[in-house]
Every structure is written in structure tokens, then in C-alpha cells.
Image (cartoon, rainbow, N blue to C red):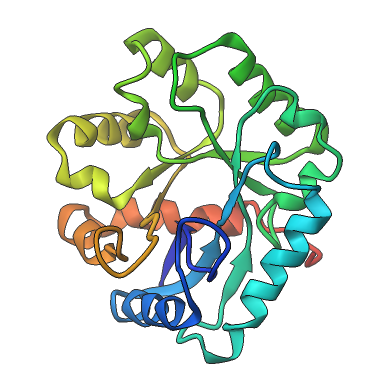
Length: 229
């Protein structure tokens, strides 16, 4: 059973699924590709939201609109939290962790690296005893120097790689480096729709050996809570 760690399947929450029909079809495709567990991670931008609680209410409503019809029933709500100045001090930030786990998915800014970014990652992990998962680490190659990439890779986070990285020679090099040098990595389709950003677990399974995919699948259990949220 594959675990989908990063996708935008909840309808109307962000730039992902635009309606319930799209969401249900995305889940059907994932199931056909071998996915048995979905972590839904709609974008969370602190500067756009009224509050964490308001975001959680919208997220729950979006999920409730499709949950009974989803082809995959094992769904855990999370968020793709944009790293901003002071995000670690946002009231309720810990509630954006993946339901049932200590994992929180964070997205670095698409701009030149600055020291405060790593400080926010550290503060969230230390203050709330959460395990940070860094979204699509391969995407920062155009923005960060080699040394800055090393700094990001050394944050003791789970390093999330989009399946699409294995279709790109340059991004695949970084993905292979992550898998060779780190024991905590996870895959996700980062699916948004049914066209240019559709579920692509078939690609990953063509490109990687099962034992590497097993490492990804094991991350959920490693950081599962003893008591459900």
C-alpha cells in the first residue's frame, strides 16, 4: 500500500481540485495506481488566512463534501504550510500537523535562502515536538546555492520528493542524493488536477525499486501518535 504524503485533493481549498467531481476522480486514479492512504495537504499561507481555526473549518467542510464517496477511505488531513517570518509563533500552528501523526509539511519560499528559514523549521520542531517534512526539496535547485541546499538537507527533516522529480535528469540527481545520504524521505504526487498535475504514482513505481518506496511508506507509522487526534 502506497502512502500519498502531498496532494491537493480537497475541492475549492486552493489551486488544486476545483470541484468534488475532480477530487473523486483523482482518488480513483490514485487507488488504481496502488495508493491506499492519502494525506490531504491544501496550502496554508498565514498572511492570507484569518486564523488557523478558520482554515481548519474550511478544510473540514471541503473534506466532508467528498469523504463518503472517495475511492480511498484512509484519508488524513494536513496542510502544506508556507514558511514565513514568525510562522513558528502563529497560535495553533501545531494543529496543522497531519492528523494522527507528529508530521507537519512545510514549504520553503521560492526565493534566495535566508538564515531565518532554517530557524523557523527548527523552532516548529523543537517547540511543538513535531517532525518537519519539507515539501518537494528538489524544486529549490534554481533558487539556492549548493551550500544552501546542503543546509536545508541537514535540518533533520523528512525530505519529501515529488514523483515528478524522477522524470527530470537534474532533479533526479538531487533525489538520488537524498535517498543515498538520508534515512528519512517520503514521496508524493503533489497532484492538483486531472491534466498537467495529475496523480503520477505509476511514474514513481517505474523508476524506483520497491525497497526505496517502502522507506517512504514507513514514515507515517514512525511518527504516528499513540492516541489519535
